[in-house]
Amino acid sequence: MPHTTSHRGRPRLESTDQRIFQAARELLRLKGPAAVNIDSVAARSGVARTTIYRRHRSRDELLQAILEHLIDPGPLAPDLPVEEKLRWVMDQISEILENRLGPGATAAIIADSDPEFTAAVRSRLAGRLSSLADLMNVDIKAGLLQPTTDPDTVLGVLVGAYLAEVLRFGSPRAGWTDRAVALLAPAVVNN
Image (tube, rainbow, N blue to C red; front, top):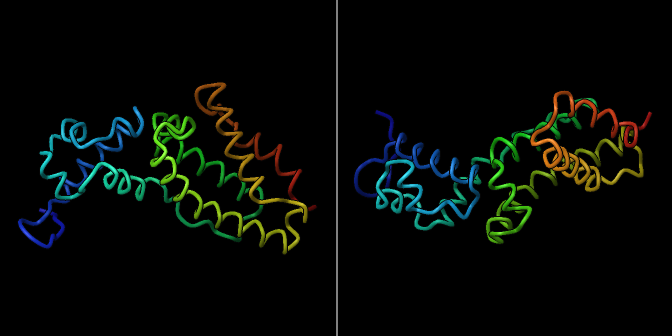
């Protein structure tokens, strides 16, 4: 039976950790961070409150643990063509906001209904977006992007375009990413 070790008491079962994480993630995705608390996670997961408290001392600690797993899109290959990098960024925005954080958490971030949660998400995203901006700066220096390109503005346009698509249609329409990249690429790619 898989387990993780703890410093005291019985070994922690990985399946218990997974149940806690899954329940918290579902609550976050569907209802936002306000719905994530030890009682609701215990009820949804079937794991005792005391067991959850042994792993996460507070609701905030539990939310931090969830965010660690949800906002990590993985490395970007810097040798992709610019259009593919833009498409990859759009796919990652969609994956994070739609599938990982979900509509409940995304709405809470936009409304800033839980400022600590919003700050935690922004902090985690900032490092990732900074890496993407650095890659764009490399492409500017290599002459692949126009020298007037502002990476932060490009990233803002991509996130904003995704959110506008979701607000208008409920979810991105088929082929939308390709159309968005086709519209934006000529504005930034140096031909």
